[in-house]
Image (cartoon, rainbow, N blue to C red; front, side):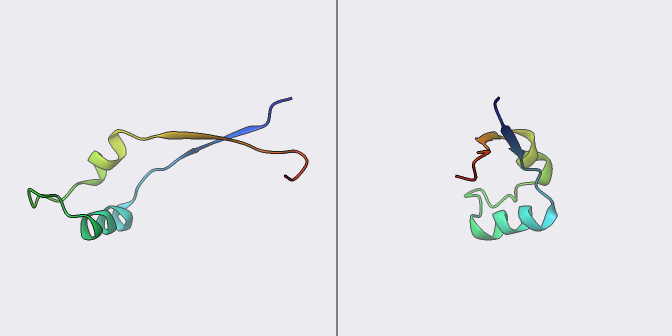
Length: 52
């Protein structure tokens, strides 16, 4: 039996603001939530049934 989980992040305004504050774009234009959420990465990870 395979036990897997998927993690898909959807950024909300506080996270988008943090991104803009921490790493401003060279053009000076702030990134929007729509832009951040357009290309999302799906992360798969294994869940051990033995607790390891």
